[in-house]
Length: 247
Ligand SMILES: [Zn+2]
Picture 1 (cartoon, rainbow, N blue to C red):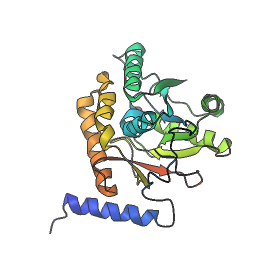
Picture 2: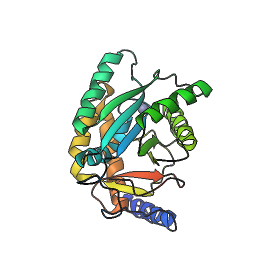
Picture 3: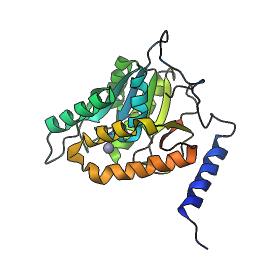
Picture 4: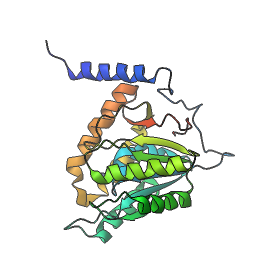
């Protein structure tokens, strides 16, 4: 007797539902989410990522939903992505284009690709960057991951949030084949934003999008199957974070 892919999807969906019982809502609805709209204050959203491209691949659809309703979104990259043979100006131009497609603004935390440092000086430095951006919502890569830069950014961001007295919302996100052991508790329907997300990911032309983007699509299809959408991005809200801040 074989286990089909559909069985796996169904079981994963049940698991997700089970985990969400008693905790946060599995699906945030249009009513209980914070909305910009007329008369509402715009949100400042900061999406951190180990490299240019991580926020776009992990949360591109969600970012587009925020910016479409008028919220202000900054993609904060830990480094400029320079890696031989691709120099920093090429990577930064790609990031600028990706941000334009999503209606977001790029920013850099000043570290070096492949050489992430987590020490007291860098905790302080990173905290100043985030405090300067004054987010209402912070998105962070899940800290169990194949890439040390992703881990480092995640740890720096968690420390910053805890030291802020958790005054803004904190959500973890996942990226393609890098994130491990991630079970979302909340989902955002990105079917209507999928084309722009794809375009933003492909703006990182030096990063072999023909290889990476289909893997990310498998993931958003899978998260969609779990959550009842055609395509979705999944998030874990820190249990101590305020909720209902997804678009
Ligand atoms: Zn990365």
